[in-house]
Amino acid sequence: MKRALACLMLLSAMVTSPLLTAKEAALMAEDPVLEKRVMALAHELRCLVCQNQSLGDSHSDFAIDLRTEMREQMKQGKNDDQVVDFMVERYGDFIRFRPPVKSTTFLLWFGPFILLVIGAAVLFISLKKRKRSVKTTPLNDEERKRAEALLGDK
Amino acid sequence: MVRYLKYLTPLVVFLVVVWFLGRGLYLNPREVPSPLVDKPAPVFSVADLHRPERQFSSEKMMGQVWILNVWASWCRACRDEHPLFVELGRKNIVPIVGLNYKDQRGDALEWLRALGDPYVASAYDVDGRVGMDFGVYGVPETYVIDKQGIIRYKHIGPVTAKSLETKVVALVKELQQ
Image (spheres, rainbow over the protein chains, first blue to last red):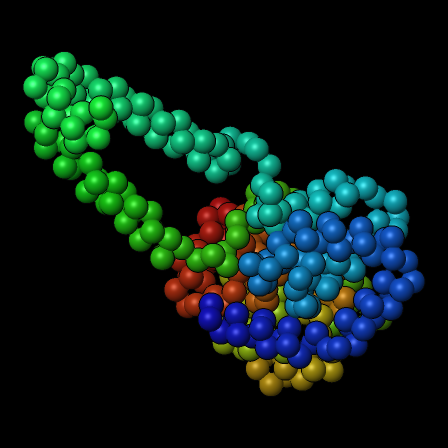
């Protein structure tokens, strides 16, 4: 696995020649609106080779190929959803940085809120318990005088 | 009892966290479940690696269990796993099709000459289009495709003697029944 990774990294370092990025820069000049759309959507998708980079950030061969594909599809008039669907069909939901809400991702989406509710409930109950356990006995005259003296009240 | 529970809670929480983090250590983040498993394999037709004037069409493989091995001459890990496929090819258990991915034809042919050619056919995916349809993101990758043309298994990265035997060949034999 490590070797495969090294192989890929080396590959991306070698194949991602400045030529390709220069090519994209040229495309940017050619059609800035389309190119902005490609990059905006590419930032929503994960580069599976580098994983913690988006397709927009990565200079790997993989990311460049997919950006080229996205560009082609957008030129053909496909909308963003259709392009994302194309990617998900091939690479799975994992390619999306924002996974869709479905039964398998329920905990991912709502887990934190469930924990928040549990935490709030525990806090509420323990505060109530503590309130009950604190005894409130009124001060007698002597205690009141001492308290006033300490607080500096006349 | 209730008093003990209070002191045990942090321990229980700690153990749960340890369990999750510990499991995470043994998961391979590069193994992304493919949405294509149990779906029909993309049908493709590209130039044959050996005879550029001919086309290789995956439809030819319909009706039999076959293995698709995605490789490239620039891929170091492919070199590691290749002898295993050469050996498997010699056994004549299952047809193996090579998909030469984003490669130079000359380099690829030289590679096969030097290391052996276990493939019943080699498809030449020069621009990576077929690879994209298969969701290839790291070569080598190996697919087991059944008689109906459904992808039944996908292996990402180089196979080992063990994974080839226990996962790939075992599944092939089961599917051939």
